[in-house]
Amino acid sequence: MSEFDLIRRHFTRATPGAVLGVGDDAALLQPAAGMVLAVSTDMLVSGTHFFPDADPFLLGHKTLAVNLSDLAAMGATPRWATLALSLPAADEVWLEKFSAGFFALAQQHGVDLVGGDTTRGPLNLCVTIFGEVPPQQALRRSGAQVGDDIWVSGMLGDAALALLHLQGRITLDEADFAACVSRLHRPQPRVGLGLALRGIANSAIDVSDGLLADLGHILECSNVGAEIAFEALPVSQVLRSCSQQKLALSGGDDYELCFTVSATQREEIDRLAVQLGLPLTRIGKIVAGRGCIVQDASGNPLNIETEGYDHFR
Image (cartoon, rainbow, N blue to C red):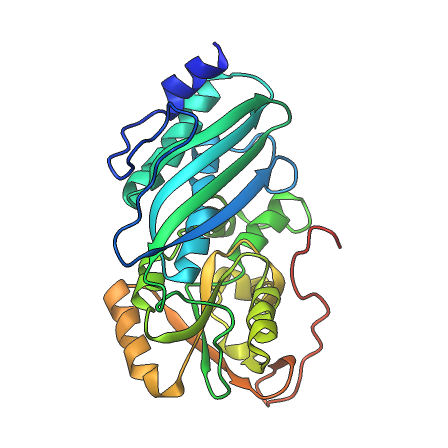
């Protein structure tokens, strides 16, 4: 199978949202009137972001999901994506399953695949995603204000717990592993929440490298500090029973949203949680100064040694 056969067979679909999709030297895209483009790129590398024998359907899902999570953090509506693949071989069975996982999530969020590239080499998956957002409603990292509440969606730490088990660093029983492994392999991008936070949140970021690391980006960009209540962190019973709650701070791979909102909007956030069927938890507040202090149940600072994942540390 040639490179072009591979593209036609597995990655060419109708692109009703594009002026011109796959098949030319470039795609032609037209954002809706009054919108600006939000563009993000994420790369998944075999051996770094996933195991070489990862299930290809789930890998197809995650390859797109991590990019959708970035758009969610900007309050953007997903529209188009490009996909660049480096493949050791043109494995028909693998490609069929990978593309099925990718397109299932793309269809769920109305994303057209409009181009990309393929080459032979070590397994490497790279998506560039395009979304739309009204320019004055884009969520940013730089808008946090002193007095804001800090919120997170969903549960934190389960993906990191599953990874520790797969790496042989801890041992979970079958039921506990089953309860958390989907958070690692099949993250759910919070696109609906991102859209609902337009005009409400002062800042937002997706939690991909660990809560402390990613919240730290908001604090740096906004020139503020934070106080977090450790006991308020939303964690599963599995994580709690393993005494691994600190993974909620630094584990990574959660792909939840962390956002700050005026304390006057608490009832609105509670209504959003009900409307979306998604837990939203208030974990702390923005304060003057710099850095983040994690407090125990008595309000005393905890010593947290690991802040999150960094590829070059």
